[in-house]
Length: 452
Image (cartoon, rainbow, N blue to C red; front, side, top):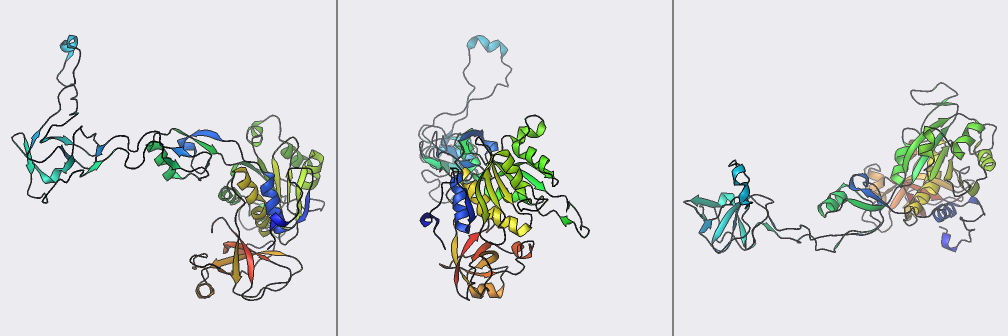
């Protein structure tokens, strides 16, 4: 494995270009090119899946008052207890003429020694309460409360069934750490702690441009045409990598139309979404044939190439560019499905991580269960990582990915051509295979897929 920190690289933020980038150079350059997006305050219901920009602390104790954990009686001291009932709230005596007899009662605010009052789950315990007696353990008679036959000896013990204020968190405690990817549990906890909005690094906005005159969106294509492999999954793939697809456009192989989309129309409904994209991802058109127009469109638009092709297979025609005047990044994916997925992992994943203020996505080292033959170039091959070679050989699809092993084992999967998806559909990693191959038991770098 090449350590990109030891590899001299041009500054991706400058005017230089990394040409024929090695796999690790490509990842480094893409990650270094992005800058963290500024924080935004969003209502709680809009923050699931976003990255928390700042730590969230408790504004008040959690819970913020002492309450009953059971239906029953709040009691003070030992029984038997005198039952205290709520009285009507005091009101202006000048309004007595308006009483109807249905006015709500107040609550018992405090208890004296050997007093009790009925309480429900979640109810505010009166001052002086020493315990809550469960309803099935008490017996009420002539204004007095005694222990029933079902009550265990010594019940209720001091503090029984009281949720004390601050038992979950004290005011000022850190509830959620900066950098957390917010999930529904985080949002529920933030709401309980009194938060209405959260500061987040919102997912980068992405526009997809799916190109190709020969693409069918449904059914089995006729010979000479191909089925769309990107539309049904690429928005979700981008989401797993940390982005959010706002708009998807299907384009023919037309230079003028592609250039117009890249430069963002100034008017029209599409411009509202496209103009806020931090990243445009294109599929196809990265080569140099008569129907490949992306490089010409970028040059005509004044874009700067950050990564110009990858020194590996599949995915070598991929590119990463930046539109002028701090415009959106453009990630050009090859038209072959596996080549596109390889380029998305090497360039798109690190770029989106950089937008979110996250570190370069990690890789790991694995031991191969079978030899891999030499090839004319470095390859990224779909692989399946497992606990051990024994587990992998027994049932590779059921093996748990590299749990419980300091050096996981992995196997390179078949059907790994640029246009093939069968191997990729079973993979949980991409294996970096050097051009001279790898013997059985040899170690290689694995790039985890986001569903690992």
